[in-house]
Image 1 (cartoon, one colour):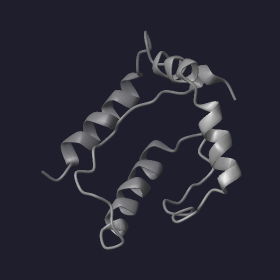
Image 2: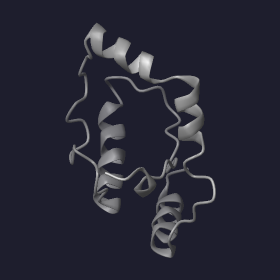
Image 3: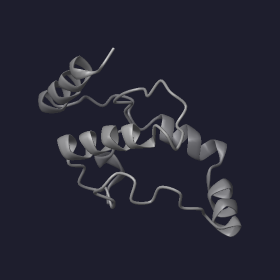
Length: 101
């Protein structure tokens, strides 16, 4: 796994607070992007497959310890200077135009 292969993008903003009632809608949206973009590094290929999973207190502490200011700065710098391929730009544009307003 090469960090340079990753990009952090917001594909769509879900305007609602996620509840048990609208969770199916959000899972369908996630599935749409998983199917459309076919991310190579994604372990879970079906949206919601880990929904409701609770990390142990030990795991949460490890994640908290690992997320230092230095790490946040490095993550924030990952996309600086990167450009998206025309194919990815077209997929993002298509998804944006298909959104329900």
